[in-house]
Image (cartoon, helix red, strand yellow):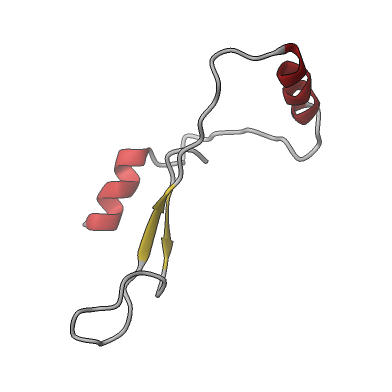
Length: 73
């Protein structure tokens, strides 16, 4: 989801002391256009009708800032 931060354990920059590798944090941003062409709108409608498309945000999901706070203590 847009705004999520994923942690890739052991995929970051090597530690200065040479003792292992850090974690890489990936911030996911999804850009959506403000204006759509007719063809774009048709494609989005086709995706919306797909059985795999099921957007259902719940109250239990944390906000972006809550996730950042959890990552950094």
